[in-house]
Image (spheres, rainbow, N blue to C red):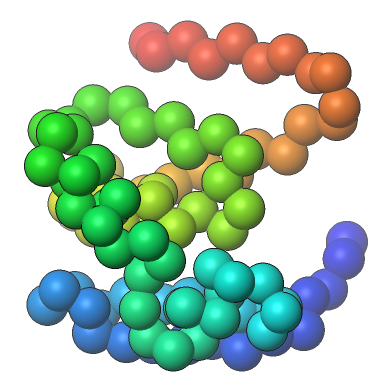
Length: 98
């Protein structure tokens, strides 16, 4: 298991308590999170305007900026949720809903 060194940043953004785990200050997205803001807020507002629920797949998500925003409005058992899946190159995954 790889242990990451970083800092947990907790902020209130859009009336929601949000936590970010920042490990790389040179990463543009993580720098935004360290400053207590989401990356690309204009894009996020467009996504929130048109996404009304269901499955949101954030492919190639870096650290999940969009997923973090959307998980706040949708819950499983009263808790926001997301899943990180790490696949080897050229792998295929099939997701089935039961």
